[in-house]
Length: 160
Image 1 (spheres, rainbow, N blue to C red):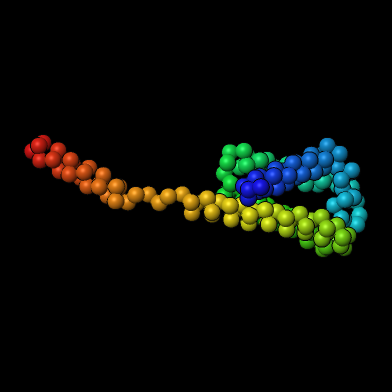
Image 2: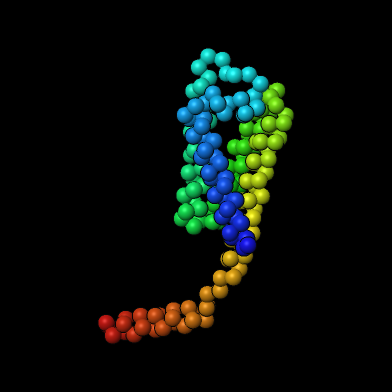
């Protein structure tokens, strides 16, 4: 299986996972919230904050999806690397609030690290594709510029 196909499968898997997870937080925040890893349910109207997390996740997934569907694989790699910071931030949040170490590492850190690995793999793929692209024929370009310059000189002389 080619690197491009593997990267596409990994990226699509992340997109679907993040989209599903974010939608769960929007539609029914009580269900996924215990799996986030924090020790206590938010007091008061904490559901609003969980919905905000869901909206964030859906938007992150949509950005990745647009880049994948439009073929901007290098940008997809960069965005995966940057969006991994959100999962590392979730891990730090769980740890800072004395939440579940297993969830912090096994869910958030693992997800973020897999996003980084996928982003780096996409970087490798796109770098290889860029090196296969032939360099422009500079001699031909210089020749065309010289012809254009010469015709410009002839036009100027004929207009005087």
